[in-house]
Length: 334
Image 1: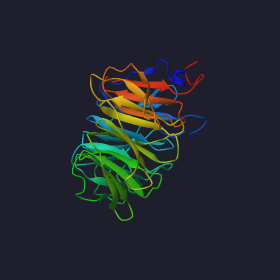
Image 2: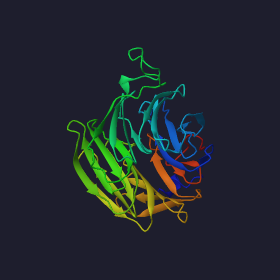
Image 3: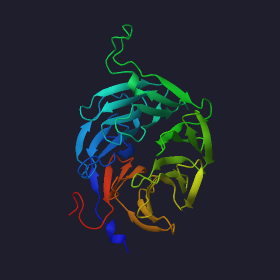
Image 4: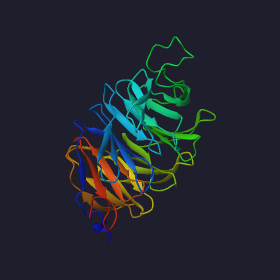
């Protein structure tokens, strides 16, 4: 039995004052170090040590709820999408906003390609537009080549992919292992695969129920995409358009899901005030192995650390919790 691996008191990370909307880890950067970023409706995304949950810094500048936050794989950059109609790209060492990308509606989703110090960012949200911004073409200071630019930040050039295709708010964007392929999850209950070379969709899959999280398994390079929707979780091969590996129907309304490909387990978070449990499942047998209590509100985000030895949950209750997912001591668990 593996139950003792996670029957551990979770670490609670305080600091946010409103619901936590999204969590995202960097890759392992150096000396087994990695980082965690959280998006929150308090407007203030936070950077933390991924192993201990210790606060490192807060990115100050958004004037509305932050819906999603991601780190570049090397943790040098952060991207955030906000209800203030902007996405921002940040320097994680200085906390400075390098780019402010203005939109015409709430930004719900941001994504970097999986490469060190990425030069492009994908955004989406209530405009129902998937956009790609070229970050190499602007800097935070107005450029001497454009004397008419009086704003503090010239918005980098962008182009739209597949105008008119999304029939609902884009809630998540995932950049697959192949940098030419993007995946979107939208409130029209469709998961779509996009080819950046042709700027068109190459596959779509309709899910049952409201789309929750849509994320890649970051514990392996297999590129398995996990989607929570309604009572079900869906697992796709992200490299093949709309290639469903399996779906698992549960007795619960699911807000979030994360897969640990190596251990062949997945974790889900409940989506209602009456179901604030974290559940660990067996991927092959599709059965519930254990449940973790601690949150006092729906669990909007769940993610495994890049080494797979813990997972993090973010909740409506304003806290982030770290749960050990390995035998023996790890981090602050002794």
